[in-house]
Length: 52
Image (tube, rainbow, N blue to C red; front, side, top):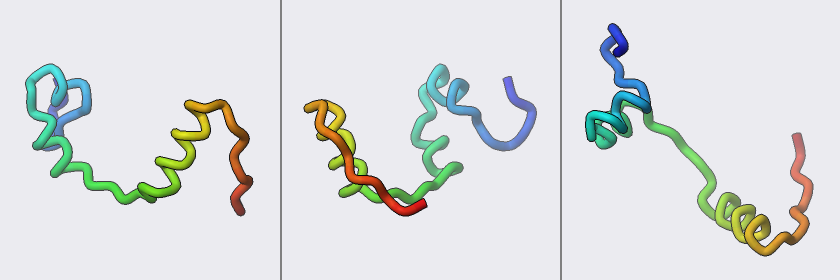
């Protein structure tokens, strides 16, 4: 059990407090890029290289 004010992912999962975890740990992502990558991985197609 953590002693800080934030839940760990494991604690949130075990305690059924994923909504609280999500509020405490906001993130941003590129949904279109993720969906394209996931689709290519599922269909075993090569991906385009992106700039580093």
